[in-house]
Length: 161
Image 1 (tube, one colour):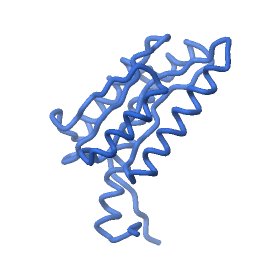
Image 2 (cartoon, helix red, strand yellow; image 1 turned 90 degrees about the vertical axis):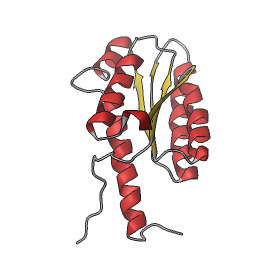
Image 3 (cartoon, helix red, strand yellow; image 1 turned 120 degrees about the vertical axis):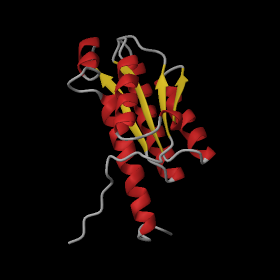
Image 4 (spheres, helix red, strand yellow; image 1 turned 180 degrees about the horizontal axis):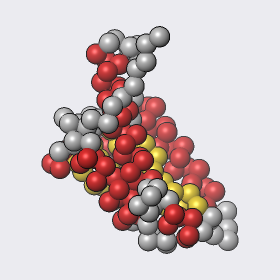
């Protein structure tokens, strides 16, 4: 049996982090830090790493589509936080962010990862942005590994139309 997978080696990759600014729980900066440190640990050069800020999680997919369409990036990591409130706003924003990010990846054939915390409260959000578990780190690691998998599949002629 042959196993194909990407390795966490980002050398030669150009990657962007797309991060929401709206942050009721003050966790997005920690997600960005996790994504940046992971990219650098994986060998992505500092000059090959971009940070794009958008107003909120709802705007992440639009930015992901625009960056994916540019052809400049090997992968995108989206980070943000949506915390449940007293209205159904949470359901719309979280659902549309997830769907839109997945659609951008599918439409452009580019790894676009989901590092958006969806939590019931601020404490849950902070727990997913801490040193032990950081969804920004997870999203970047997945982005790098998927970009390397895409490269390997292309080399082997797998997955082409």
